[in-house]
Image (cartoon, rainbow, N blue to C red; front, side, top):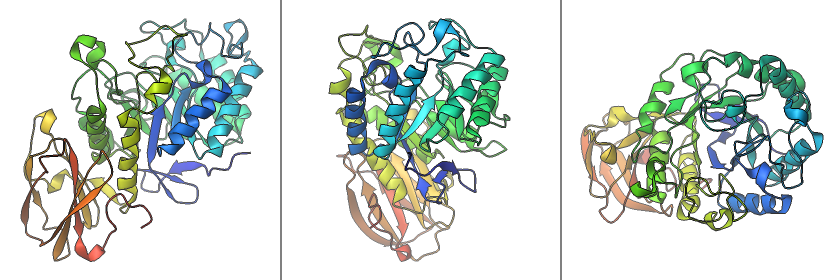
Amino acid sequence: MSTLPRLRVSSNHRFLETELGEPFFWLGDTAWELFHRLTFEEAVFYLDNRRAKGFNLIQAVAVPELEGLSQANRYGHLPFRNLDPTQPEDAYFDYIAQVIRAADERGLYVGLVTTWADKVKRMWGGEQEIFNPQNAYAYGHYLGTRFAADTNIIWILGGDRSAEGVEEIWRALAKGIDDGAGHHGLKTYHPFGEHSSSEWLHHEDWIDFHMIQSGHGRLCMPTWEMIAADYKLHPVRPVLDGEPNYEDIPIGFNVRNGYFNDYHVRRQAYRSVFAGGFGVTYGHNSVWQMYDQRHQPVLDPLFTWREALDRPGAFQMVHLKNLMLSRPFFERVPGQDLLLTEHTHPEQYICVTRDQNFTYAMAYFPQGGLTAGFHLEPFLGSKVRVWWYDPCNGEARLQGEEPIRRAMSFTSPSEMPDCVLILDDADADYPPPGKVGA
């Protein structure tokens, strides 16, 4: 029996919340091969690790990319009989249900990808296309019926592919899920790199929020531009980056370019959230594929999945979640209108968020020693409380209080590789940044 409250879109259509009205900051981890490559004991080890690090959602695939149709799970089960989506193998999905309920017991939601999209539209690599509108509806109906009582599921359709030309298949699958469950569950679509679900599906009734994949191709992908573009769309829907650069993945998929590290991960995550994202998903190159010596490596992993669980970026992501939850949540909007100094180079681009009532603002500085001016006249109080927040350890340093002036300039501490400037209306008397419930 599930214990977590269901999630829904907030009344302003910008965020997610629980059915009790509590804010939900999506802090996801990428575990695409969780159900396929791990035993239950290994899955529980993984879930315990992610819970301890503050993650609240796991993205995993029911029918995954890596030989998901032809290679059995650790218990010898394939998802379908005769490669037929109308003939699901109950034992295979029983195991998925077991892991989903273990996640629920640990306070974790599951972003359940129904099938990797190569099974719908191959485009490159992958396996054969087996879905059409009729069997997609039948498969969706099976999933909806099978998981109707699991309140910790968010449905993710797609999987690293375009939806162009196959919209009807995804529409049928989504309808099957709802018809089988007897209610509407939150849904989105996972696109391929440097694209958004909005490009093909913005006006689909079944999609509740948009997901972008800023991806792994560029050293400094302007994810904030992708988020901002979706943020401006009508009808309004929440948006997040569901696959930024993974920690320890080759930049541009080429080891000669080096590997993304925890700094690169922070830089993408904070700027996507500050640009308007309602959360973000972290990923590690070894963990998404659950790599160990039993498997063919993909994209030159440096560690086994167990070793990679404790890489620096995985420890640091919770500080972003705590920072967002330490200030009024549902009133938050993009805040570039406060910035007077524009650093246009992506390596130095400062991204700003604030609340609608001008009681706080946050600015992510991607480098130490950067100076930026801010327009603070809209703040109603007489003094501003200035903090510097370290995204590596979640520590907040109080710089002091200053009289609010129309234009104020701040320089990020040179000893920090990146940091967040927090400007609070002193009259609001907010707790230190990152202190949730204080």
